[in-house]
Length: 112
Length: 111
Image (cartoon, rainbow over all chains, first blue to last red; front, side, top):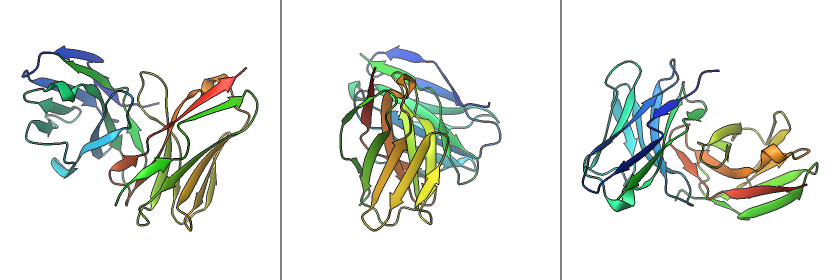
C-alpha cells in the first residue's frame, strides 16, 4: 500500500540554524500539506501546496518557513533560522483530489 | 470561527466492549469530517470520514455519526481491542482543504 514517507525521523539542531525536512508524498497525489504537533498538543496546519504554489498558509507559517517541490517526488519544508519554539513533530500529508489526506510518520525536530 | 473540540480527554473501556468517542465542532460551514488515530510516536492514521450530506457511515468495526443540528460527531468502535489504544482526533475541513484537528481523546483498554 502506498504511503507518505518522511526524512529524517529525528533532527537535532542549534537555535538559528537552518533545517530542511523532506517528504515523499504518495505518487499520484496532487495536494501537499505540512502540519506540526508540539508535544502533548493537537496537530496544527502550516501550509498547503498545489500546482507548484502555496494555496493556503497559517499564521504560524511566517517568513522563516518555506516549502518547495524541487522535483516530481520530493516536497520539502525549510526553516531558515530555527527558534526554540519550533521544536515539534512535523507531519507531511498528501491528498489525491479533494479526498482523504494521508499523513507521513513525521520528523521530530528538537531545537537546542 | 474554526474550532473542533472533544468532550473528554481520556476514555477507558473494557476489552471487548464498544467505545464511543464524542466531538463537537463549531463551524457550521464545514462539510467534511474525519477521524484519525494516532499511536505514540507516529503520524495520524485515517480511520473513517463522513461528508455533511450524510449522518452515518460504517467501516470495519467503526461507525461515525454526524448530527449537524447540534454540530456533534462521534466515533464508535465495536468490540474494542488492545490495538485500539491510541489518541483519537476528530477533524473538520471546509471543501476538503486544510484539516482542523481537535485536541484528542486518549483511549485506553482494560484487560
